[in-house]
Amino acid sequence: MTVYEKALAKLEESPKSWAITGVAGFIGSNLLEHLLVLNQKVVGMDNFSTGFNNNLEKVRDKVSRKQWKNFSFIEGDVRSSKSCVSICSGVDYVLHQAALGSVPRSINDPRLTNENNINGHLNMMIAAKDASVESFTYAASSSTYGDHPALPKIEENIGKPLSPYAVTKLVNELYANVFAKTYNFNCIGLRYFNVFGKQQNPTGAYAAVIPKWITALLEGKQVTINGDGSISRDFCYIKNVVQANILAATANNEAKNNIYNISYGQQTSLKELHNYLIEILQENKISVSSTPIYGENRPGDILHSLANINKASEFLGYSPKFSIQDGLRETIPWYIENLEA
Image 1: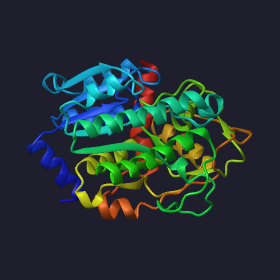
Image 2: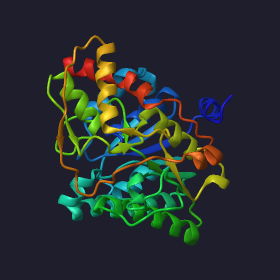
Image 3: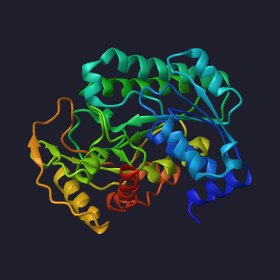
């Protein structure tokens, strides 16, 4: 039995109360679904700036009526101290996922990114500390590595941030460290690496590459690759991220007050990603013939990313099950079904 399997069994035997910020977003709604299936009690909060009520409706359709009754929703904003106090009241575990993502968005509007990602994070930490929650897990980011050139990325070695978004995620980690030392409030930050999966928004100016490309290919359109196709990422399927959050929330004290890389540990170039998508769409009987368009690199983007996940493995028992190909084989049918719907 793996560490994760033991954690799931323990939660099913003795359910806990969870708070999820950004619950109507991509990652938040996937966390909600998995926790409700485990018969946990969940309170979620979202302001619908980037989340969608449709994501919550999809979760409702996936779980039983009894499980859905274990969920309560607060329409609120992490920039509001009152909302943060409300969601933290009476819960055991906090999964703080709410943030304004996207490097380009942060370059276009650094103030708004700062208000959401720094002020909101601080509000949630204060509320969780005052509520004496058992654990506080927050979404950190691989963007924190900035201009540090070494690969794979190791938690202790970071460079200078390359975007306002990266600055905000670094500040989150600094606040967490100070809270641990000042208030004995230990928490865990999970540095996500390019998460993808079902319910990820494929539209809008700041859509992530995988849902954006899947949708374009399904619609018979060409995709645009930033750069010459050699830019690489360590893509992480959403079920790996769910595993990491549950392990972090239930971790022992030795693992707390720390930062962990969360990904699969596999480097994939954008050109390779495009080829994977074509291949798996064809496996799903979707005829695709697409020659990509090559464009300019995006400002603030790093060229290559690859995670060393040894630390998460050692302290959390993290063992990602899904490679990028595995994840795409689960993700693409979801987009086929929902695009047709």
